[in-house]
Length: 209
Ligand SMILES: [Zn+2]
Ligand SMILES: [Zn+2]
Figure (cartoon, rainbow, N blue to C red):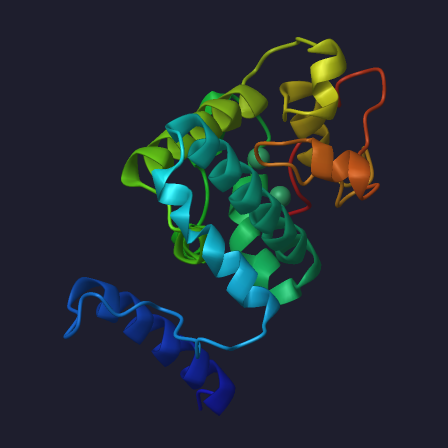
């Protein structure tokens, strides 16, 4: 039987999305706080004016915040056995090229899009910023999975790349598992000591069958 906690979370998420599409009162915000509420969240919500900021700034803030959350989720997908069952589809390729960026279980899309919803709701971005963010993260994703023997110098500390991401896909007999979780920005792996970058590219990719 479905655990009650899962039912609560799932029904809450479903209704939050439904309220966005078919609101009885369109002006009502997602978060409603009393005027004198002293909460850290309140300061965060004051940033809601971000939608009126220049497009490049909105895109950058959305990109960085959602990428960090997705980096955390990617970590969990490797460490929680139930989530790994979905994520291992992405790691099952023994050959990798840019198209591998699109090889994943549909459940992953649901999870990653829910993560995107957090900064978008809290900070209030324009549709153009969300679009710009999607373009950049897709382009970096293609690049990181591409069958390219290239090195990007100092930029490897900032942006994900083939030299980092092939080691994320290394076969467990050939290299350490659970490294280089970067999706767009490599900086999280360097900051949180999950980076792994030997001089050579790995010779064998994939998972144990
Ligand atoms: Zn992974
Ligand atoms: Zn990958």
